[in-house]
Amino acid sequence: MAAAGFREASKGVAGKLDDIAVFVASEVDNDLSSVPGVGPVTVTAFGKVGITSTTQLIGKFLLMVDGDEDDGGRGAADRYVDWLRALGVMNNWVNVITYAIAGKADALIPGTFTVRA
Image (spheres, rainbow, N blue to C red):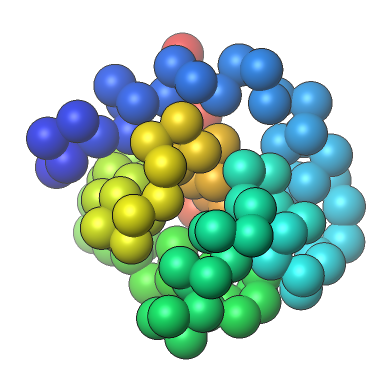
C-alpha cells in the first residue's frame, strides 16, 4: 500500500466533485484534458510514457486492479496514486485524477471501484 496513499490523499477532491461527477456520467472523451485535474503539463507527462488518450488512462487504472483484492478498488487506487506521483503529477491533482478515472472505470465496469465512507 502507498506510504501516503489514496485514503490519506483524498482530501483535495472536495472542490472538484461536481467536475468528477460530470466526467463519470459523460461519454468517454479521448482528449486527456477532459479528465478533471489534467492540464497541459500532465498531458505532457502522460505522453512521455505513451498515454495519449483518456481510454489509455482508464486502461492503466484497470491494469492495477487485482481481482483477488476485496477492497473495492482501494489497492488499485493506491497504486494509481503512486504511479501518478512517479510521473511528477502535482500532488493536488493526483487525487482528483484518481477519483475521476476510478469512478469512470466503475461506471464502465461496475464493481471496479467503490467509494466507502
